Amino acid sequence: MNIAEFLKTTNTEYYQQDSLSFEPTTIGIIDRCGQYLQELSFGGRWMKVTQRISDSMASQCHALRRLDLSAVIIHGDISDVLDKVAENLEDFSLEDTSWVDPEAPKKITPYFPRMTRLRRLNMRAQSTAVLNELHNVGGELDTALRDMRNSSLIKLLERQIGLKELVMCPSPVLLNDEFMARLLNLRALHTLRISHVPNEGYAIELLGQLEGLRKLALQEVRSLTEESLQLILTGLRKLESLSLAKCQNVYGFSALDHCHCLEELEISDNTNLVDDDLFSVFGLGGLKRLRVVRCSNVSTEVIVHALQRNQLETLDLTGSTMMNDEALFAIASTQNELGYLSVNGCYKTSSKGVAAISHMANIEKLDVLDVSNNRKINEMAILGLHNALTLKRQNRRFERQAHQEDDGFKAADLAAIEVPSKLLKVYATQSSISTNVDEAVADCIEILR
Image (cartoon, rainbow, N blue to C red; front, side, top):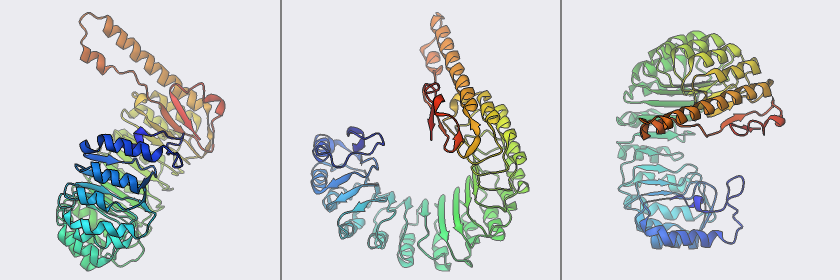
């Protein structure tokens, strides 16, 4: 249950904390439903969980398997809640949780050893007093953590040998030999994210020994070089997702040739990335999500090459200043599954190119289009998209009507002919799209500025 769904919200979807009905409404919901709940969340809307609310949870919610207190203001003590549910918890999140009493977080650590069924744990932005006790968690975690001492993290990795996902953003520890030795013992690890490692000289190339890794994301890791990337990707033959952001010491990306199973590739903020680094991996035809962000030396030619050989669900070209309308024309003629497209800051693209997207075979699948920071984009592009979406809806209605008039039609066939109803979100900050067009296209398109 998500408590936020039962509460009145403002137009920004944040509950008015000063409302007198907030606490009694929340307590009333918990008192009526708490004994049946296995999952409880407050929706991540910075709701204030008072001591009375915590007491109600402790009194009623004894069957909880998942407790999500992310982005919540805790004004009180939740130790009584954990006393009742610690043994049952499989998923526990205190991501970005704020505490009115700075001593209150310390009261949850004695319950870590009792969390024997815990599989997922999110403690992002919690105090070191909490994080340094994580090695006492009794369960076999699939995923952890954020900020703790080297010794505490090493103890955690020694005990959680079955860890499947490790996220350290930013990395709280030194990537020294002792840490890397423990990391390489995590044979079940399939997802690794590390960011903000300011020091050079670490043996980051040892990550290539994690042969079971499926997803790897490295951001601002100064020890990553062209040579170490080559060694990493040579070993990770099963890698499906790779993200490299702001790794400025990588001066060449020929190592991408080793990525034969990639479905998702993201490279951002690197002027060293050039077309020749990408032709091979694009030619494999397996990509579904591609993000080339603020890489000023990547041209339209190689993106067209990618579009001709891959059916993409996501294409993010934000800040790729060499992009022009040819890339958008290629999207229109080749793509059938695209749901997200960003040409934010691609100042060589124009309304003509954006309007051409309307010729995509499945234009109704497009959920988000970002054309921000380009004064060449005006309402002509939006009207072209609106006409295409309107025509698609009309055709679907005619098709449904024809099936209904057919004596032999089946209900299942009719259900498959769904008339699109969702709005296409168009982000248009710092563009030339006039506000006068908003109302005219509101039935199909929501313009966000």
